[in-house]
Amino acid sequence: MKPLFFVAALPLFASGCASTLPPDVIASGDLAASQAQVRPLRHTSPIPGYTHRVPVDPQPWRNRNDAQTPEGDAS
Image 1: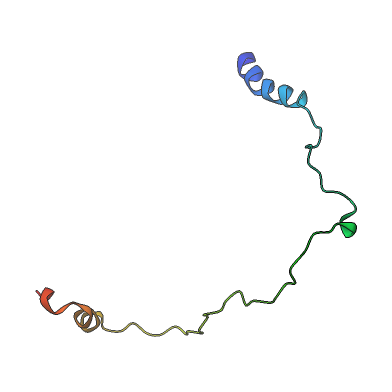
Image 2 (image 1 turned 90 degrees about the vertical axis):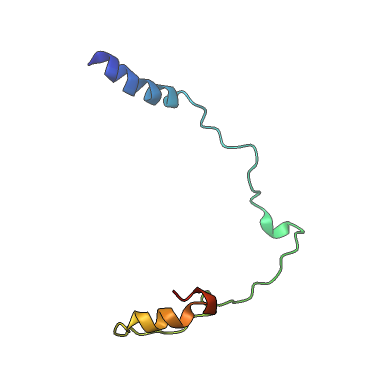
């Protein structure tokens, strides 16, 4: 039981010793004074090709399948 406890506790202990400093690159707090050019946003629809469909009853599939086969492949 004790070796299993140490195997589980060792990563937790090691993570407690890890550095918690923030990364070197941090966004400046004064973004309003920056000279960056930003394009204006346009609204675009998230569903441009949507068509409403309702559920229908099943159709006979053999006629539809035979209509879609190429001419030379009819067996």
